[in-house]
Image 1: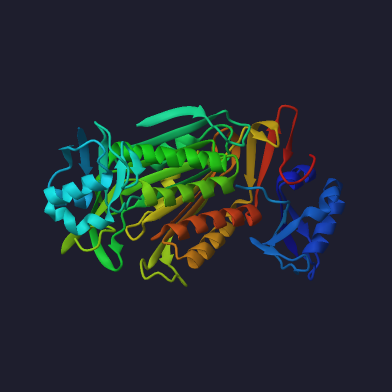
Image 2: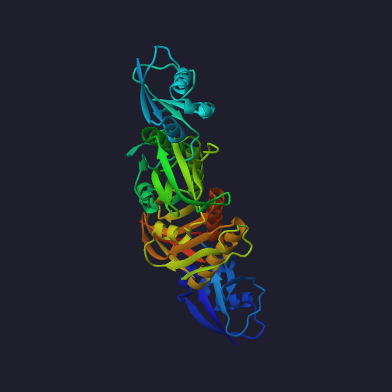
Length: 81
Length: 81
Length: 158
Length: 158
């Protein structure tokens, strides 16, 4: 199945892309997708621990299982305001 | 000596005037002037107890002694904002 | 009207050396942006404003309009004392208070307070405390007009 | 952009039956008055706003400019969740949050929050708490540009 990955700010710059479509197995968790992205974009690795996660616009746990068509965002520490 | 009396809001309406020049003896206190005004404008009497006092733009005690040319304001409970 | 920049005596902030002040009574309609612009300087990151408006009801009774009256000179002086006290206490870089007088319709603004500081907490605290002090001691009076009468607020029956 | 009036579920206030909302990410300059006007209805007496501006220094270091980036759709959704939570908790009659993105110069506003209620305490509390929640969870990021480099705030060296 396919999921859309969104990367922002320091993650976007490290990966060199803001959006990426990933093919994943059914049952894949958010954390597993994040691991796969670290492999795909090694420059994300030093920042692996600081990410929060969102699925379809809601904050999600690393253990959340993905569904086909989900939009998954990896969210560095926010600093709005 | 002469002092200028300023009256506002409910006091102004009760007295029918917003400004009044009063002739007072040297040594007169704010409270004594207020008493004199109650006599001069009897409709102020029911409101005598609710007044605060200011002399030349600063809040003042009833025991404050007046000087020639002072501006004395009788201040009903404020309700700005 | 009193618009000036003067040294912030007692301010604990290194920046700026000048605090922006404005204290005014006016008969004209109020704009919040105008006061934001007075206190907005490069050294700040936070502006908090309070805008008081004429509510259409009070204690369940329908209000038609309000009229504000001020002891103009003392009101401006008292607002300035409050503003300088807040600037010192909260290390503000700017504080402005403008109160409208005369007859106001429902929904119109009667007062705007703006406080600026490098950080948000100080701006919130200063704006809120300035409003409390204004309501407590600035010589301004409000008359409420109802369908069946009118009265000066805080005076009892009238 | 999300501007609507919807029933205030859980609001303890009898008035009004509709709460005014606006939650938006924009690239355009911000006006505090615009947000005041969104939340200003006849049933309220108090509007409190917070305006965040680009400060010329951070921890003693001179800042040249800032750049904000947002996950637009989620940022608007998260601002709306915060706004509705604040409206319920503080019985607001209106709340609006508008955050600017893109490159901002010193002194420009990055965010405006406006909250309205019949009484002042609720408006102050709601505006302050909405800002804390925004800084805590709305997916927006700030990059600081210095004379000798740049970095994303909160990420460490970069």
